[in-house]
Length: 245
Image (cartoon, rainbow, N blue to C red; front, side):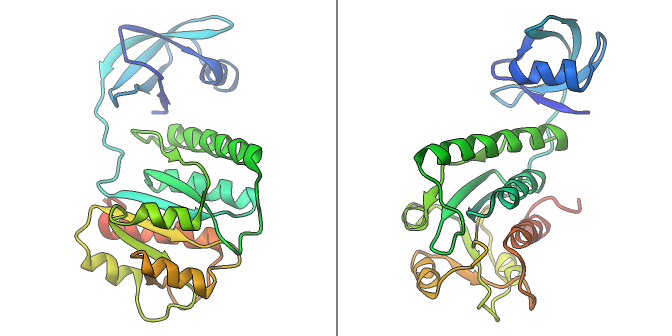
């Protein structure tokens, strides 16, 4: 059953407003008696029945509590260097579907896109909307956060000692496989750093390693940046998370 995230606490009756109400009424064509799973701010979930509609809100009535079992046991951060708009949107959407807890957009030397302060806010807001919609569609138990855009150097300084298993996929790495590194690690937190279309420079790769990043390969073929993100997330969930049951 489709999920909706409610900004507040569940009660016997709640009102859904804004874009969610519009989507229910005008996209899904919901009617009285239809049901949906609602997740609140403290990760409580319930099956709710739609009982009334107005121009501004949808009223829902509590039916029963439901359990939340859609979150991965591994805490994954995807630090993705900025890609062209459609590719970045694709990565954000797939990160939600593959169970990442957060995406941190990173600006590195070979990024082909650059944003001023205004555009950074606009892009982040758009990526968050895409992430929220993906979470509803795939049945996540919690929303995935899209963090503000960071410079690579700032991200590395903040990542020290709290990144868990910190892996970066590097096209010049030929020996260290992501699978072996994950199997050797007992950490419940994994940080994945994926480069832009132009990859990391040798200087950046050296700096990442200085800050605890482990260079890994995804195989003998060079993948597009957006493919690498999806592949790396998939491997992590298969080896450490809940992919495949």
